[in-house]
Image (cartoon, rainbow, N blue to C red; front, side):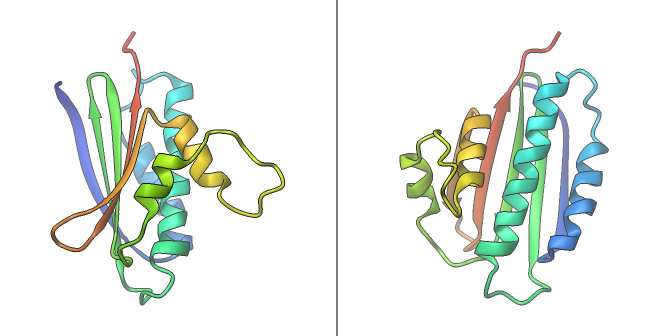
Length: 142
């Protein structure tokens, strides 16, 4: 599969950086990606970033970086969000998570939303002790 565009961004652990993240994401050449797919990817990027700030980096200093990588390929878009939080069981939680929304639940709806939108959603720890949330969204080029 041919890589069309790839970029990385590092931001501090700060919810205020979300505007910067979304503006950076909008800078991609994405006119050939269906608008609904692009908006869904924007949504899961925002949700994944805010989860990294609120949960993975809850006990990290504010100057701890979150790294985001976006790759646009011929038939899909990949988003990787790298955090430096503790090793946790989010990968296992994602595998067992249903896509049904519980309107009464106080939390967890963001994960279900990401699972519903993404064609592939996983969370793993790499050799450098970073966690990666991988979001893949397929699309058909016109």
